[in-house]
Image (tube, rainbow, N blue to C red; front, top):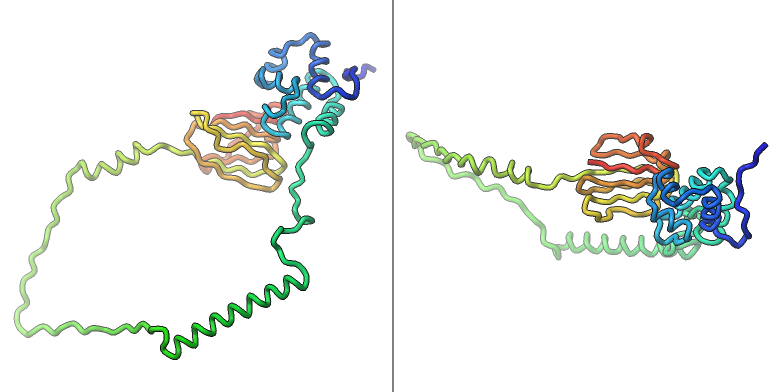
Length: 261
């Protein structure tokens, strides 16, 4: 039974060097790999050169290494281990339960702090009530003013006042202002697992480029069309302008790439 190809290199080789060596053995060019993996040629070159600062985040880098290794028919585990050991961490620990809040009081000291604050609040409220009762603070009184009685006799005839009609251009001005206002798109994201997300507007301005923790949510508003790159996309729920968007047709090797208009 044929075994999958493994990089024949020293343990000191990084994941990019391993992948580049195997690509050469399979007689594939960088352009061939980029076309099959649906990445840019510069991203493949940066991965092989191990210039990880040019790639968007640890999660996406691990997905690229895993997909690259599968394309070459080899086990991705040695390359992922080298990646975790030498360059970027495999996971980011976002659990802060054992660390504690930096300013949270604990034990007897915290109890005395809360007790002192409660006593101080009670003294302030008691002082305000005392001054209000003794007249130090002004009381607001409301009095009713009776309307003057009208003398008997015929009442004057009231002449109705007809306001002038507003010109048609004034009525249409708000509609024209609304039409001229730029349209915005609202993106809602809910993450079932750790995921890297990058969102850009049409002019290239970055609205989001960060790693999200499992169970978190995020909302981004921008001017469409909006370009999205989502890592671990199978575990991400996307709603655009209050309408859910199915990410499955846009996923390639755990990463979804799409444009929302």
